[in-house]
Length: 491
Image (cartoon, rainbow, N blue to C red; front, side, top):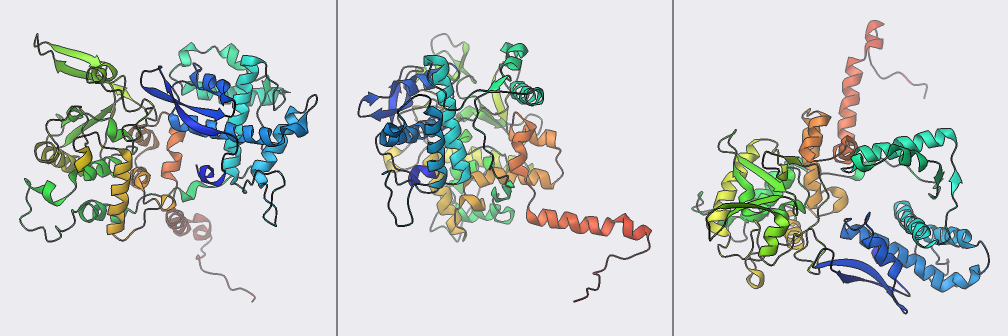
């Protein structure tokens, strides 16, 4: 989030802390002058939170850290009975409005700038959720008082909680009576000035520039003339590895982190569509691997966690001390087969990209990818100092940005020209070509139909085109024998 660079910690620092659950993982913690802030560590290791992402931990740690700084700097002003809520209210105001005066000074010594409403809401909610947990765990004072809900509010909350439950893998473990009881009171901050903004700025990669990105952006410098190019030497002219990842994103809809969990054997020829690739991305921990025992020759099936452990590695979604090795995982919609494997199936659109991908895969495996790697991951580094190591997300992002610049575009998040814009391009291509919402959900691997909405927001051009068509089809004027012409105006 942007506020990481805007607010500088005063009396704490956020660091990685080694954890044994699972082995080799790390937890974000706050270090103060008194040492490690233990309640936050226990909050992260709580059963409900221990499987949440490292990025979530990061946001929580920084949000709680800012509240710690506020208390350290100004807590002495709130000594007395029942002033915790006043303290939190003033903290929220300081975060929302900033603390720097017009003359550039700050008597409170915080020097916090004015932040966006979205950032403020995130910080306040994260601090409040942590406080509610501390209230239940240690009996800490609530920063937001519990409020009794009327009947209508309880019904609305029950619907929201039950809907959230319906999307949960653990719904069968939930008790609806408990859900109903949880609607009786609420300790949530009341954001009365929240703004509702259309996600129109969630832009996608320009459709007319996608092929330019692949065939011009990823053309190896110095190979512009393409003399003697053929199927056997494609890797000498193009960065086939990054083209494959870009196709998985722009024509397969995957997130930028997901291809980095793929093994070599996760790509095969589609038995139902010869000449096209069948690509699956198994769950990085629970997905299955089949291999032959070198002693008995028998085929053995194990999950990927155990298979990687045999090679001295951990799944890449496990928070790791190595940023280059780590790759996120957003818990997408998965499917299974008779072997009980858990994986995402990639649906290429337009479908001809499945044929292109298979050709690139064969060339990459036989011609480009090092053969003697000590790991099973499909995508590897080609840099001299890291040759054969698992390819990093950061390196891919840097290569993507360079490729985008080669075709005359700047890589900007809000313009959809970064790696995530490729996934949004896929969602818009499905929308523009009439693919039904239920099918788009499967293609984008969203658990909820609502999750795909930001990826398929109509553009201004689409809205205008639809309105023009509606104007032509408008029946009211036609039935009245009138024409849709611009009226004469009295000025």
